Length: 355
Image 1 (tube, rainbow, N blue to C red):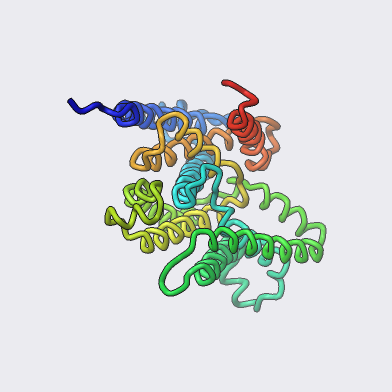
Image 2 (cartoon, rainbow, N blue to C red):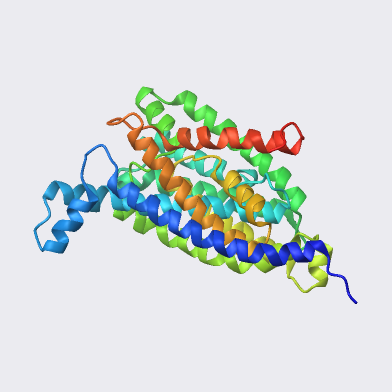
């Protein structure tokens, strides 16, 4: 009689739990989304607007503007950015086989930040025609270009003879992040008072500038990255056994690395370009789901997208109402929520807490 390993039994038990988690997170995302459309400094009621629509009455202009031109694009932007950051974190943790990895390790966030800071501080040096053509989108375009440029440089450094070294990628990412931080510091030192205010607000992250036009520019890339990520699940599961073992079971490890890095660069670059620097989502969400449902990327990536979207929408609601009618940068809220959780993970791993 063949004995069944407890680990195999645990994997069988985790699949139904992961599916239940997916359903619960989808419901939570729907509830948080409705809450986001309902709550705000203006006092516009979603239910009143829905009642007017059901009764065939004309919606007041102010209600229409607040709901359809401010809250709804902000909700969609928050869902996409949160999902992109969380899925990017899950992919990076699987690629590096480190539960504390995040997109910042490969320098994407630092490169995007350098691009945005450059546009804010030196944007006045652009030719008049180019500045007029870019307009409000100069900062997002520069941030996205900076994120992709850092990714291409990182990939070129870490790839030799057609093989990419994860260890070299990690070290080069840290070095590129430090270099981007140094250059950003020089530009910040050169900035005037008005530019410093813009830099501070952008660096802490916000969804306040969400519009349908900005969403249309950034959403296709984030959606494409989110659609590609589940296709990496089998490869990331195999990579957990090590590169040699993954090669033996037929996983194209080199192609997996390239696609994973490009997916993370696209998702994170687009997210940072439209929302600024938002921390902890990429670390906390995947790690929390691994604790709850296990490391199987078939479920982890989907659940990370749902939980990341719900968490960032909730953080945005808190940012909007906690000091209304003013607004907190959303990065402060995510850091306030994520920092204590990160410390709890650290203490729990060291055995200081038994929770």
